[in-house]
Image (cartoon, rainbow, N blue to C red; front, side, top):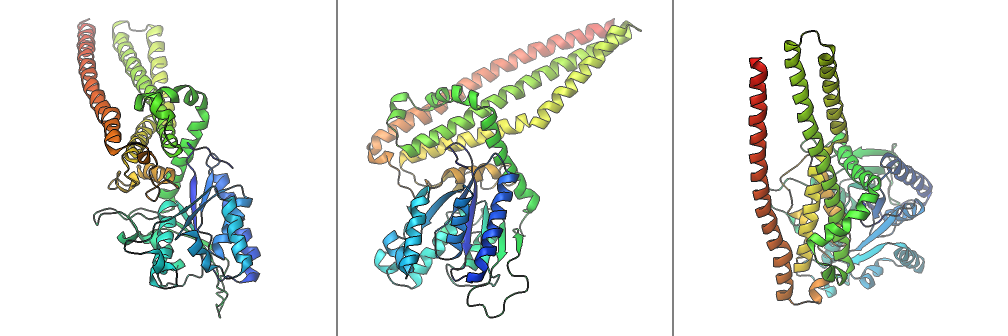
Length: 463
């Protein structure tokens, strides 16, 4: 299933042993096929994406199964590819690695850890192990579900499968991620396939069975993560449902952010983020209109119902008054149910938060700030907003903090700061000033209507 740049994929990460038993490969492939098939069926509007560093063994088997299932492959490399290829001793293994690289949608190298140089990772040792841990942390941080082909044995080895599982369940240490000690732990579910190593002497009786492992933190259980995944699937469903509206309105939304002459000269990474902003912005506007329309009609219908009830005391026995009351009440309740089940207000607020997050990400990229805003955006808000941060993280692949902002290579810092000041800071300032005046005028009008209805109520009461 191919995805466009505005769809939110459900990102699957993989960690596992390199030295798998040859006789287990067939069963592992079947279990992986079943897992991917179940995810595609459960979240039918959402494309899947696999992140795999393509180490020997589990990484490659999972990547091959994913590609067979029509899933896009993203490959983060722990070090420059010429150094990473030294891991693969046989020509067959090296050829397999290069063949999978060619089939990947994106391939990119993670930076070396602070204070580490290429000469440090040329040979096996602690520096090279730290790079394996870094790529494991990247996979754990950027996936919604981590698949682990793991024997279940805890290990303190740096860069081991057990450590990556630990990253996903209990959070990533600050050495591998931007975070504050006060931030809530970022964690997620692990789909564990109990997988013996080739060197395992005693094979567990439950080997090659599957189980879900969930973080043991505040309310992060199966239902909570399924809710996040359903929100992502719902966003993609809305993109498909309102595709005509999106095609018509996105150009206008983009023009409010940047003028056409700047958009035409932007590199692909910025164009994609602007398009993603516009998608969320248009959907937010659509559901805002629906929310306000429903609210207006509910107020009108409630006024009609109350008026009919008051009128029934004046015109006792008039069937039209009773009919008006019943129809008005039924219409109001139907409108409420439609809005509630459609989650119009929730979607309006969520999509607005997502759009504003992408606006910030866009201008950060222009400024040359190569951090993912999810590392700084709504980190203290857990619960209903989790899916928004997941969405921002997903859209950063592979354009997150490890990418180089190409826009800053074209224009000077002063030119880019002028652009940001004019089209972001000044624009937002003007918007909020106008909004304050608009809301003040609306308040005056609402007060007039309130006084009018109060007068009508008083008249009805008198009669």
